[in-house]
Length: 386
Image (cartoon, rainbow, N blue to C red; front, side, top):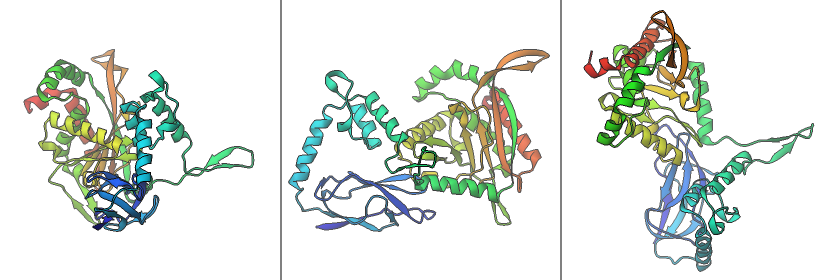
């Protein structure tokens, strides 16, 4: 029986998508649940699994084509037999891959690297992880779609089309700057109390909860207490109305090879430190593989961006519309500070709060950030509910 392969239903905020890469060709056998193609929207890259086993008989839409929800892009015959020539090719590929270590094969598949073109440096000429990583770096340095163009001075430039995700990021950042009155206020926090608390309990925490105790969960908990105290920072603008949200959906900005994504921790105020750490780890892993869903990227009442993981000392984060504010966290570094009339060295972190001055007054913004500082410098008060 011939069945249609259709684009999945996209979210209401996504009008179209782009076909990125077919993983099967006409005549090849397909197993139920096997990924047929990657589909890129302006928010995430989706996989399209086969709903039945069979043979892919015809591809109607090619890599790079624009598609919409439920559009037919291929035909699959559940009764057909695979093309033997295709099967032979697959057998050759399988033999070639036998000389590729599993970790190397995984990275090669994720980055669409042909391992047959890589000279293995491992034992008996096997392709190892490091060989593939070098190939990935070389591929990134010269994109396949870029054609070098010599300039008048003989120097080379390359013009590469933006991905749909990158286009969307550019649009939203520009929209944020054009449609909001953005100001940024700063503060610094002594992270020593949190560091000591974490060092004291991290082993017991991991043993009990099965997850490591990081620092982001402390920042999120401190942010939630500040949002409770200053609900306007958790609000958003809709025309001439202010929408006060009775829930706390925190977006956590995560950098990936495909661009910045901001998955949402829903009802974060109801979660424990362990629950928050699990979600952050899960989001981080799936962001690298492009597995975060559209639903997980939709909504959010407040966002947190941690440039500190890349070594950033200070920045002015841009609001994720229609939210009214975003917290920027930076690298914790030992710095000289005045304490009780003495100069001492403390692990300091600079915090930045960018906020929409249309609805958030400077007083509330400054006090909001001061609340986060106080919670982090006196974490015992949180445990004691003081």
